Image (cartoon, rainbow, N blue to C red; front, side, top):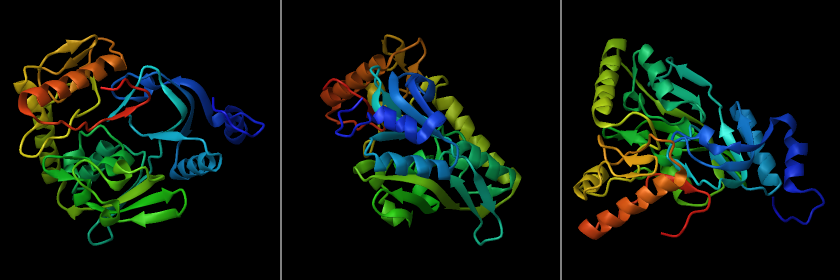
Length: 313
């Protein structure tokens, strides 16, 4: 697995350290929203923030690289898979506090963001309606400053509980996270830190009003975004325009490579509808990027992250 000077191979170290919690040679296609991706050497599933912290600390101490994966959206894993360890974040505890002013919600980083939004709606609490159909985890949303309908994580985050490899547990504000459009300092830089949990500020409303806003957003999504297996939005919107508009104007809407297709409904969504492999989606990404660059001089920046080995292009 790796060349190390110590007597135990890292895989043996992992077995010793984590025992039955360690899973070997799992297929990443089973853990990503696009349903593509090859095998990973080893995986750990964290069912709580405490287990997530323990896994990260243990792997850091052994100097074994790892990937942290929540819902598996916004990532494209290569068909060759990943070397190292994937920590699957299933920490999902949610605590709603209506006794503070404003009310707040605290959620572990593996909690489903849309699920949190729906829980709040049942209590007439406003602030995350836009996220009611976002296919991501709380931690991933903080990491990438997820957003929709003109709102984002930055607008409601009070603090994120961060585990830093060298500095331990800390509370980071939006300022410390240096949020920008669909990114944060965690995403932009190789800082060795992970999100354990986050707290968001809310507003008191009524169940009917919150549900009506959520229904409106969901209707807009159904009209404009395709069903099926995808990574979410493929490219960030360039300043003054929309990635989907540029890809459509370039004549690529509906283009298919293998089992993947640029959606006929929204050109910034690439859908796996015929048992695609990661290479099919990657080739569509390259095609869209190259064609938009050639036709309009716009350098589309991917919103998704490529994990594993990829050809240069």
